[in-house]
Image (cartoon, rainbow, N blue to C red; front, side, top):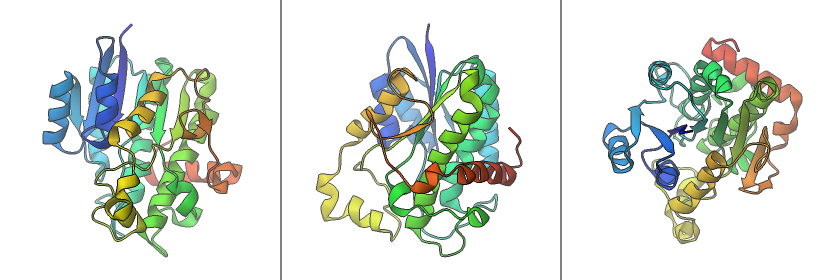
Length: 275
């Protein structure tokens, strides 16, 4: 049976690399990107379907979900891979802090709008997180946007921690119905990440340490591993992986049931959705 894989952030970086590694005759790739030109180029190279959406605009996410529901009779894997770190704080047109919306609220909304199709498909939801969750995350439930004491590092750490909390919440609510979820760290990958910020990530990704970063192909191989592997055999649903084969330690807030529940409920309230 042909598997349908939906990958966001697929126009470059590890999303494009993983897509190239996954392309074969038994796979239908549906690539999602912000740039029409870059997304189309990767899709044309691989013979894949593609759609464009700007995750700083939640209406784009709603339109994307409607398109996917119209064009896909099943989705075997939803890879929530799009993300980024931004200077600021900058409010999106929807009124949320940009880092938080692009990395967490947008993929949460997309997953919600597809949830019945995902459950019916016994799908896996693969969330690209980061070691930044452990290094910089410090969530305050009353300020998920991180308007107070904003820094690019704190906003990004909180957003990547949100990916892990969302993974846990999906597992708790939907694994019994056949849906699996996982979060992972792709490694510190040599891309244009953080190029327009003044965060410490900018100095790592574009300074003297750049020579020690892994290639997008190696980072893409980690994403491919979780997309291609069998849930509950190769990886455990609801977990965060520091490497492809090792459940990793992360921010202690990720293990606090009150934070997991409160973050889920507050995110749903912000998006105006009910699960």
